[in-house]
Image (cartoon, rainbow, N blue to C red):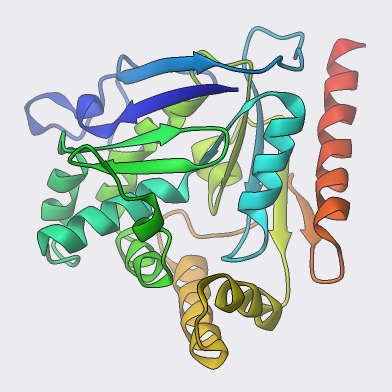
Length: 277
């Protein structure tokens, strides 16, 4: 596992153009394995990696609604394989938190995009967390709160905001052997070329109970907020949360954490074996 930093501001298009440094247009399309010259720094190499037998990074995407278990499962899969992992939602949560602190109107798309490209915040991928730093301070614990997640869902519906963060998210697969990426549109938009795609789901009430227990919040309020957020994420016009046609859907409602991890790991190792044969 390698700790890396991604600085979104260094990936901004020149002269305010919507075209990125890698030559992508405003529709945000990118070819598999493409790269741009953004700020992406490897900090520490810590653990032996499972070889992929390929020149391109092996990418596993794990998508799903809030509290479906995708963060803990993806982290454990990355740990077992010695690969990097990233929570792409941290980019939206981080930006939502930055906008909240700056008192920026979340309906002002241009203002949010400008803030996204600010140099005063960045993402750091570590073995345990996808961390958000603002003005040099680690604000990850604040970013993880449900109210910030609600704000993140709102800004994630803005097409220009998604485009501003997309290239930075894709930088996470640069110069690594393997990457486990979790979010809501990793398999459909961020890494459509991923070798293994998983969509985790569970009953809304069970997911809400998990989140309420984690944060010590009222269960009924958490259920209501989560249902609204699920609806926003699933119905937004740009990159809605959905399982791709080639994804493996796993309902975690009746499964233990270990059972879910083993199901995903089996999919990954089977794919690795088919590549090496």
